[in-house]
Image 1 (cartoon, rainbow, N blue to C red):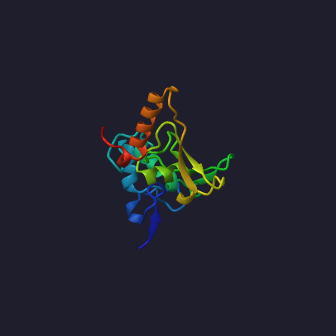
Image 2 (image 1 turned 60 degrees about the vertical axis):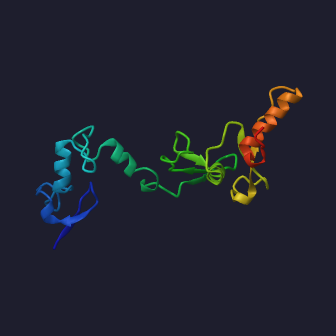
Image 3 (image 1 turned 60 degrees about the horizontal axis):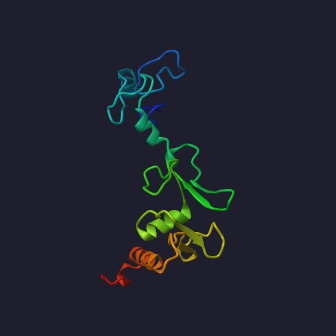
Length: 175
């Protein structure tokens, strides 16, 4: 059986699954019959939604997902060290802790997963040994920059109780 790879779906198929085209070297269209029909109908071959143009086989959501992150042809692992020395991970388009640009700092991801939640406003992650690329959990500490608004003793006590409720709830006695 003689086969050919479809240029759109990248599947190896029998030459009987391609229309004839005398202008091509091999005498066949580059895309298979199924992909040609999907293109001509203007529907996505994955989900059946309307495509933006009859020249596309996939709708934007299906095509976009297929070419993002590890599926992109330029993917090199998604781990980069920025100019400040922090490790930044890319390809986190479906992660709840990622920024709007589908990227997340590795130390924030590790601490967030350890806590089981996103970092709260006023919280940050500190590298104990100063090496911003060393993101082992034993090298990371959760720091907070919150402080009481006033200087009265009652304000400081209320602030301390709130901090204990947030970070050590088992130590707070319900009074």
